[in-house]
Amino acid sequence: MKKELTNKKTAVIGGDARQLVIADALCKKGAEVFLCGFDQLNLSEPGYRKTHVDLLPFEALDAIIFPGSVIGAGGYIKSSFSAGSLFISEHQLLTLPETCLLFTGIKTAWSEESAKQFIYLFEEDDIAISNSIPTVEGILLLIIQHTDFTIHGSRVVITGGGRVGKTAARVLHALGASVTALSSDKSEIARMIEMGVTGGDLTELKTHLTRADIWINTIPSIELINQNTLTACHPTILIIELASNPSAAQKDHALQKNISYLEAPSLPGLVAPKTAGEILAKAILNQIINKGE
Image (cartoon, rainbow, N blue to C red):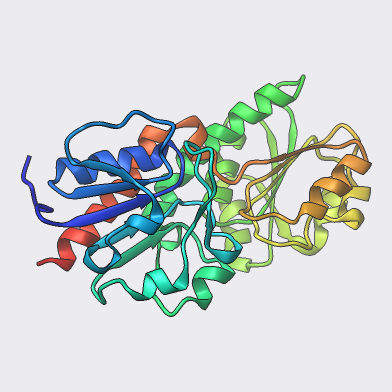
């Protein structure tokens, strides 16, 4: 394998099993990989250096890979393989070379307020579309685990007609579910109808929820799953929240009504970390290599 990243220094900070796949890909391309937030794993392969965020050689890094999930308030970074908490500061980012690439999944208030520019991987169509496949496989797993009825013949409402919404609608429709997909975008509604599912405007949500067995939300919004919409739901409905950083009030409202509510913003990392990690690794490697040409 050609070592295009020889002499490149990269840091992988926090995350889940997808980050290990990314780290392995960087290592195979010859990069030196600093790992932060993996203290519970025995990673002794050549090319890996386990360290703490505060000990990173920020001034020499060519790229930092943050988790696909959100970077929280105060620079908090979630890690599945560390007992401690990880944080990164704006001051540390400002010591990076101007050429250092910063990768993460989605925009957050913290990353948007930073003086540094981030590359938001999940906003790129090729990644988002590919990533929708393990996401939807995860949705199927959750439905099977948390319901006592078949997908075939069930009534599913999907809010959001983006990449995940389209893939979910197509797969569930193919399995025999009665799918209604709601969006505020007319082109997304038209695409859903063309696919053979019922398409409608988000303003019709409560009407469709009265007949739904499953509600899958893909829209980042703190106002969509609320007491008003939950009132329209049958008590036996299963709600799957895919949007990142959901409001804590959503879960509270659902619990008050004894409704099954699952937050699953990182399904690819849970059900297919190898495939999901390879999707991200390919994009990250291409950008780092192309930057050096």
